[in-house]
Image (cartoon, rainbow, N blue to C red; front, side, top):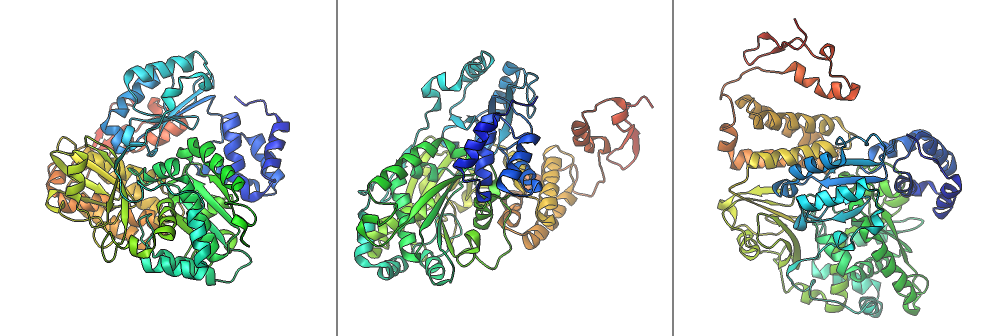
Length: 610
């Protein structure tokens, strides 16, 4: 079913985006929201209007999770499928929703009005199970609420008329440190930096030892200095708000309650490197924050904190918000920049690095939301104040997104060096079996290591801190994480594209009870390959959940193995399930008559009547 396209509105949208090919992703997001899909006539029209190859438009549409080449419908629902949502019963809620709406998961309903599917972590792990409907979040799902949602949809009630309370997102600040307790007057940090001058302020950042809070921990001052000194026609400031690591939601809180500090930190960065333009890249799952952030930007412009001659100084800078369209890999800064430029979010080959060759191949700084907030605090409080907390190599505090089997999920701010056990005690965790620090790409530890500390020199994290008690099947946790990486691989390089699928098949085989000890050896070999050969960090860390748990919880794996010896076994007919689904065939001719049993012998399945 194709929609009736109002080309007058399409042209108005194109004009609003200056018919700029750099705005291609933003244009396609707007069209997806308007029509529920980007059909062939729209793709052709947009390619000509912005003067890009049709293949580029096709590639962008098919790359991002929340863009579709076909019409998905008036109501587009995505249930979060992070492991914390699984633990809260999202699978049963998904089945109930499908039944109530009479729709098949991943396919538009027959009337073309409804689409339901899973999506990766929505950044609402502290209040799951959660879903997004047309980009708007609904948290703390229950059977009763799902039935009410389905009734509204079946009655064709406009989402704008739904109870406003359904869309409320809470911000639970459980332990507040210097960041969460500070609310600076807008412009105060800028005045302090102007008084110091750009060079002195950069030295203050350097003396503070501030390191990036996105997980990698690169020295902020060094990144800024390299960018400042790099030749280029222009310099750019980028804020990475693509908080896609499962279990992470601290940037959501900062953008909600501390957006002024985020924008002030970006402006400070621009002051240092000599930039006039900045971008905040907002993940698609946080689109509901877009009006709030735009309002704050408008106020800052009115207060002369953005725009020309900021606070009367010879310094001009402004910020533009770009929305993501659903791609975990866009959290990698070079992939994010590709997306900013209207392309697929495929990581670039490095070197050269972003500091010298970033947006439009010009010098750019790209920092995390939390990092920019910290720079604003350092401007007013000073480096010595910042160094009062943390460790020698990890100064300052860290915001942790705590979720899972805890009594008090939410945001916890601690000085670097805090032990895992301290956090567990504070959040009310009991009978804890394991903690995943840093999300699936991070480290899984067991009680023997709860004395370890959160820091760059020990357990580094971008913020995710997921807790699992002894009632949880940790192999199911690993399976969820491994499926996540397989689904999020951008497909650019073979080691990651193929390796993540092999890892997925291995954990599925183990969980199903069809594996032998040989499978653990295969996992190790595959992991070694993708760690060494993958193009970016996604592939290099995709095997971490498997390797960590095999190392620390090997008996869990061995208990699921059919034997410790090698046993060949492969279900040929089962392997064709995906092909049958794609071809929409399930007749006898689409099934093999024989498959291999566990002894490698051919047996008759009885499906073809042979």
